[in-house]
Image (cartoon, rainbow over all chains, first blue to last red; front, side, top):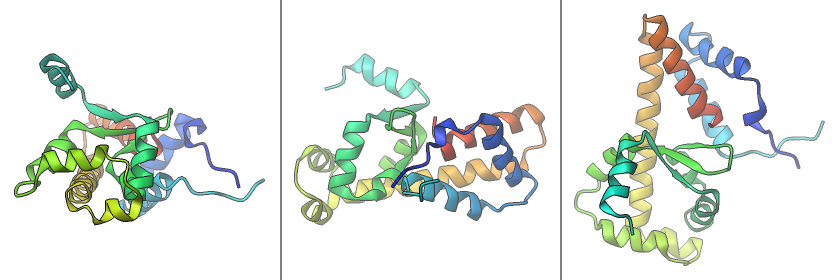
Length: 47
Length: 132
């Protein structure tokens, strides 16, 4: 199963997602959950 | 063994990096909780803010830091390592201190009204979430 290469995501996309925390579109809990998921280096379906 | 100057140089930097090979060895011995101590870098290593380590060590009072270091260096397998208390406690403290650091960073970013500071905190969060 493949993995997501988070480092290859464009910087502007990453900044956009973090900025949603500033305008409260996402919560601190949402961002913490995303970080925990990324830290586990999850396998994802191909395609 | 770090020299005095190397030690001061490490303290002067913003974060300490565990190389990928050491990190994977620690994950195999102590479980995936190890990854919660910091954020991944592009080489697969784990970057931990110095401030987080300082906070974790401050909480380690009453435990044996030398014993924790001995356990971290050993080649014992996962089940035995989890049974070893000092290293597991130290990893738990670093993970907790890192979680608090990350939450504080998010709160500061949300509350910041200075555009320059907001951008700096946003980019810091980008590194913490997606790696550096």
